[in-house]
Image (cartoon, rainbow, N blue to C red; front, side):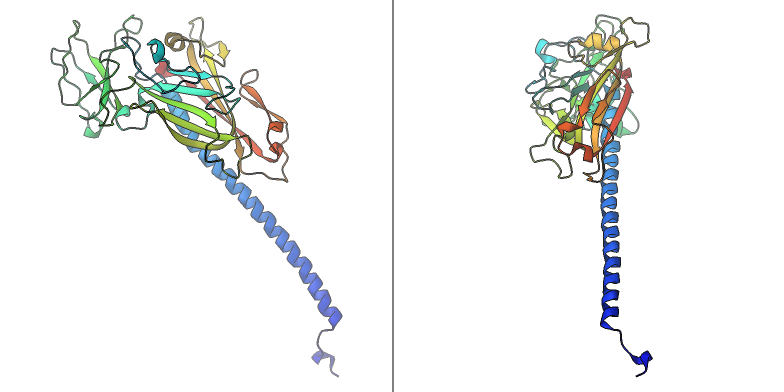
Amino acid sequence: MNRRNAGFTLVEMLMVIVIFGFVLAGASQMFVSMLTTQRQQSKIAETNIEGIIGLELLRQDLGKAGYGLPWNGLTGYSEAAGDPYTLNDAATTLAPRGIVSVNNVSSGTALAGTDYLVIKAINVATNAACSKWTFLSSGATATTTLWTPGSENLGQSDRVIVLSPGMPTSSVARTLVTPGTGARFSAVTTYADTGADKETRIVYGVDSDAALTSLRMPFNRADYYVKRPSTGMPQRCAGGTGNLYKAVVSQSNGQMTEMPLLDCVADMQVIYRRDLDGDGDPENWIQDISTSNAQQIRDQVKEVRVFILAQEGQMDSNYIHPVNSIQVGDTGYGSVFNLSGITNGKNYRWKIYTLVVKLDNLL
C-alpha cells in the first residue's frame, strides 16, 4: 500500500485533538483576560468622564459662592423645607452664608461619615433667569440697562431681587431693596427709586418660573452630599458607597431637586483656609464653619478644598489595593477612610478628586 495514500492513525488524530484543545484553551483564557481588562478599563474611563463632568459643575458652583447675596435689609424669608443639619439661615433672619458645611455627619440625608456642603448664591440654580442681571439707574423713575444680545435681558415673567450696593464697609452694604418675598420685573418697566441718594442699584434674576407668586428666599441654594439612592446603587459600585448629588432648593416649596453627579463615592471632605488676622495671608485651616455667621465667613474664609474618594471601574479580584487606609484631605485635615469597612474593599481601585477654589465672590 502506498503510504502517501494512507490516512491518519487514531493515535495521530488523538494527538492533534489534544494539541488543538490546549491551543483553544489558551486562546479562550487569553480572550477572557482581554475581555475582563477591556471591561475594567471601560469602567475606569466611564468613572473618569463622570468625574470630569460632575466635579466641574461642583467647581463652578464653589466659585459662585456668595454671588449676589444680600447682606442687609432682610425682613424674613423661608429656605429649605426641613433642616436636618441646621444650615438654614432664615430661621433667625440672618444674612445668608455663602458657603457652609457640616463635618462628618452621623445620620440624616448624607452617608454617615461624609461632609454635607451648602452653597448659596444667585446663580447656582438651573433656571434661565438666575444667570442674568442688570443695573437700575438713579432717578425718580429709574430705568434699567438693556444688554446686547437681547437674550441676556431679564424677562417680564422673571422674579428678581434689587440690591442697594452701598460701600463694602458700610453697615447698609448690599441692602435688599425689594422685600424678601421678591417682586416681578420687566426689562422695559420703570422702577421707582425712592431713596434719597438716588444711587444706581443692581438687579439680579433669581427664578424664571412664571407660576411663582413670590420668592421663597432672595437667593438660590445648592446642596452637595453623598447618599445611597432609594432605587439602589449601580451593580458595579462597592457596598457602603453612595452617589454624589447636587440638589437645588425649589423657590416654590423648599423641596430639593436632585441631580446625580458621580457614582460609587465613598467619602467627601471639605476644608477651609481662613485669614483670621486680616493680613491677606490665610494661615488657619478648619473643617467645620457651621458656627460662623455670614460676615465672619465673608471676612475670613478665602479658599475651600473639596476631596472626594470614589471607586474607579469595578471590582477586580486580581487587584489588591496597596494600602488599607486612604487619607481623604490634606494631612491632619479631612478624614482617614478605612477600606476594611467595605466588603472586598481592597479589590477596588480608588481615586481622590481634589478641588481647590478661591472664594472671590464672598466679598
